[in-house]
Image 1 (cartoon, rainbow, N blue to C red):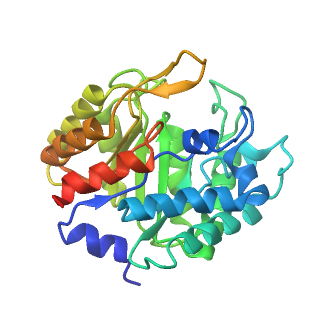
Image 2 (cartoon, rainbow, N blue to C red; image 1 turned 90 degrees about the vertical axis):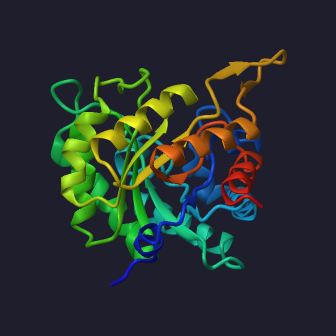
Length: 295
């Protein structure tokens, strides 16, 4: 079947994704230690409000609130064993958010499972693959336009996730790594390894999200572009690094204007999808949309 994400990506149009889920829900009252997925079931209206705000800000793509929606990540919580239910509900919320804007696409978010694979940690590769497969199947069944394997730091875990996704069919997939050590991940992975491993596997775009500074994000986008000229790049940086204000509240220091200017640089380097990760509000996305579309 034709997927509209691929059609629009191949058209050459720059697509704008959304901003942060977790940090914005925390502003809305999500307590520390409570996963956003809990609010999918307990306070869906809060997630709907945020996703509608991103749509109104100009997002072409919104991500589902399923970053931690694998059963491995949910284990030990009140929602252990309920991954399918949570993922279905999260897509339902996203569909409600775009009801008045049906051109907006829904991306199913698949984040890390929350543990390390052997030999660095306790997780067996098959358990990781199985957990991702359950989540991916639920997201596809519920009707997402694409899947985003995001905030990855391990080649092996991202490969397991991609293998699981491929079992669901030919839905478009973005693989996005978080380079939280400048231009390396916490496991030492570099952009060259990501492009070499995943681009030949038929992904729709290679990505980078979260991470550290806008300057490092620009370096990563440039490396992707040099290593795979013309291949679509997905770029969603943090709004800077978190700090504390005088009241002890977590703040991010990059303004909407700075995010908009950075997005133009990413696009100039080859990014085809731009948006924001931690700290990016609907205001940040609105400014990105305004600058990118020159309206």
